[in-house]
Image (cartoon, rainbow, N blue to C red; front, side, top):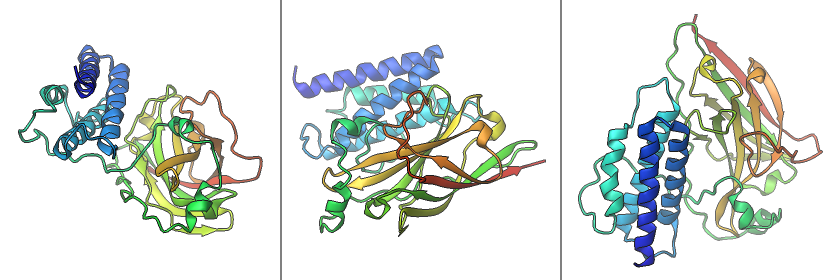
Length: 304
């Protein structure tokens, strides 16, 4: 059996595992399986040196990855109606099994995830020795940067009586090498105490203003769940990412998080931690001893 057939077989087995967990009601396991497979498919789609799949096949793989993420998001938002159902997932099985010969129209009107090399938290550790002058070396380079998708910020949820919504304004982040960061942006996610997503991740647009040791964002992020519906031990994570021209990928530089007892109207300054992002908050290591932080401002909206 050829390597490409083995790869497809592996994807199919992973897909079946996910839908089995899903049908048995083991949602955490299903989400894990779906997200791992989505990332594997995205890697294949974004691989420039792979000739195993045609452009059309890669497009379908990208669309399957989008569907896997949509199903994961549906399972995580238990309050909302399911946007993407298990029955819909089952329609994808034939496509993933027969990806090398599938020539019909894709059954769902979805788009592949925007092409951008994104690494799992900690994955870039395997690819680089953290050399902080990477960005400096590339700052004057004439090499064209790969196109980045614009910010994926979502609108505020509809208000509900007695429920509170949170807007977090990301004002600025303090970094010793702020001026050297290329295409800096923030990814915002809401996780439970086990590190499982409670909301879709949102990305800010690229920050354009840098000043001394600060990168200014001045952007509002609408948290996609009513505060009262967040489980005990949940946290809001802010991952600072920037493009590394030498390595040609977007890397997480550091992260910060805000726990439930820190949600209150007004400004807040939170500490920055070294990557990889530790969503379970078990092994935290401060980024620096210098007084450099993430500066936020919170607004609570309560519908009485």
